Structure formats: C-alpha cells, structure tokens
Image (cartoon, rainbow, N blue to C red; front, side):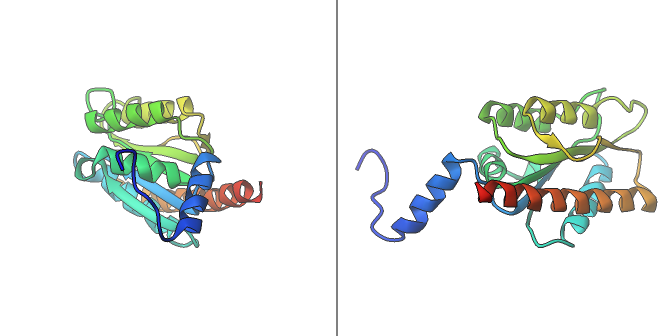
Length: 182
C-alpha cells in the first residue's frame, strides 16, 4: 500500500512499541553522543561510558561525525538518559553537534535525564556550556552541572567522568522505572 507496511506478524509487539512511543516511555538505555577535536572529549565519553556500564542499562555511544542524524534522532527518542559532549571551537560548540542538537530540540524529546560534558583550551565558556543550554531548552532533567576539562583529561578528570556515568545510569534507571509505572 502507499501508506506504509501491512503488519501480518508480531502485531502485539508492534502495537506495544507504538504505545510506548506515543506515551514517551523510553527504554532502559543511556545514549552518549560526542564530538571531538584532539581526542580529549572522546576520552571523556569513553570514561562516562565505563561508568554507565557498571549498571544494568543498554548503552549506545556515538561520535556525531560517524553517525547519521536520523539514527541519532531514533536513539534519543528511546533513551532514558543522555550525555552529550563537545569541545570548544571558536568559543562555541562543534558544528556537527550544533546541527544535531538543533534537530533534537525540534523533535522535543521528553522525559530524559542527562548532562553535558567536554573539553576546552583557553575559553571555558563554549562547547560544553552551549551543549548544556540546548539540553535545558529541551527541558531535560540535568543530573549534574556541565563537566568541563581543560586540555587533556587527567586520571582524576576521567574518574569524575566515570562517576558522572554511574550517576547518569542510576538516574536513567529511576526515570525508566517511574515512566513504566504510569
């Protein structure tokens, strides 16, 4: 037909998926999306992921430059927790991250917990701070203040990132359980 697929099998699962989407019931999933310039923000993303992996959640990690924007749109709609990272470039966030966050903002994902992170060189107010501003505009429940690291993260910085990942996973599970009780 010209209006879509005719489902002949798995009808119950498909109807449940549509019900969950329309009621904004995310999966027990954490999404980490980042951009990186000199690998510092990538190291931070990996450390956040290590912290998340200590919990019983599905984890998805994407470099925004190696992913299609529509795939990332699907991922955020199903995620309960989100961490977004960008380094500072010319006192702002990276262009591909700005593109993605603008797209997400238009989608209006709801019922998400998350935080912003990223690295900077000489200007602390830039990429990570602007990412946090986007998350606030999306009315995301921020689980912690923006996580800034100057230059290359130290081992202490990476432990802070792992702790942020643990916290995000915990809050994502709580968010998931709250939304699935309704």
